[in-house]
Image 1 (cartoon, rainbow, N blue to C red):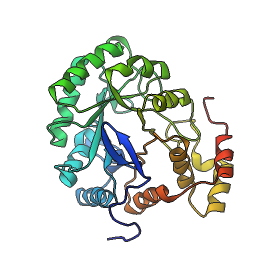
Image 2: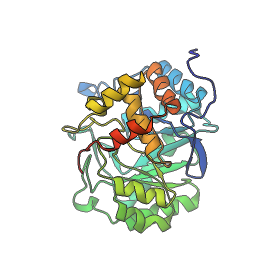
Image 3: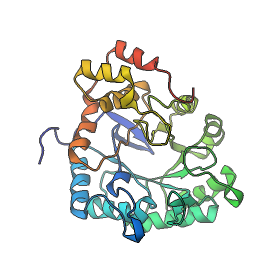
Length: 310
């Protein structure tokens, strides 16, 4: 076992998520399965043993917040989580609903936004994770980019969706409700329903949702950015490609990824990270970001960077 990090620290310090205290640096599990193989031959990615080893190492190193979805790898990611971590003692598993696997579609997913589809997705996640209650469920809205966009009968009012999720919360199937791909106005409007967390596309180079982050900070809602290092959509810049990031990384003796993640942690206290990886050495490097403190000059230079969408 690597000894590059002390056991059971809280990487990045402590944050609040769905009524739980968690490490501010968690783990996004999507990378466990890699890409879909052609001709129906399953998914690339880690073997069962390697995935279990990585997940258990993450928990050993203090990760207690893991992000997943039943549609990751057609349920395989959730199954790997169950193999590695069930009964999930002390680990907050957050999952998401609002889409379903469709191999015939261009991206392998289609929207599943109707209330009855949301209920089915919750049941699918309960089954694949082997849980009696999902600690946190994100309603991933699909009426704004990035990602797949809802059309026709998939354009469902958020109030109708939340009514279904509140029923599931009252019944004990889910512990808390989160939202994804939502605007500042939407967050403020539905906050009385009890929103624990918001998961939007956000990074040093993609700050179009800054107003949404500020609303979450004001309302004590966790902010969990996905694609925190940019570059995951065509035409979107990468944090690592920015000259100022490269300069700060070289001066500080750290990677460009570390600079991008550290900036997020320092930018707002309600930020929780879920950077994903399929390698233990990358996992450990991400967790060490919790010990990196950017100096005021570096923060000012990064703040001044003009991000896409602003």
